[in-house]
Amino acid sequence: MTREEIFEGLNEVFQDVFDDEDIIVTDATTADDIEDWDSLEHINLIVAVEKKFGIKFTMGEVSGMKNVGEMADLIAQRA
Image 1 (cartoon, rainbow, N blue to C red):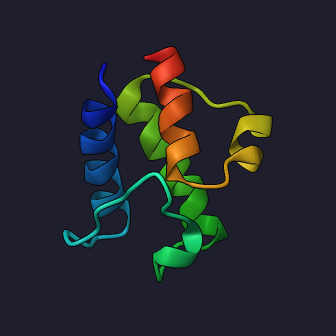
Image 2: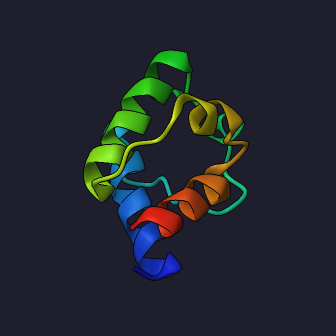
């Protein structure tokens, strides 16, 4: 799976979870960049990403992610 394909999938998930079709994520996107991204939505987001890509993140990976680019890197390692 290419990085471009990963970001296409991530955009779909983010748009669905946050109910905003205008969201386009990049490597540098963080929770500060998306208005409704709070701790509860973070859990929903992680579950949706895991389901979309057929992977499971560890708690350490989830708490260690600093931006969407790091999430994409983890997906690329497993997908």
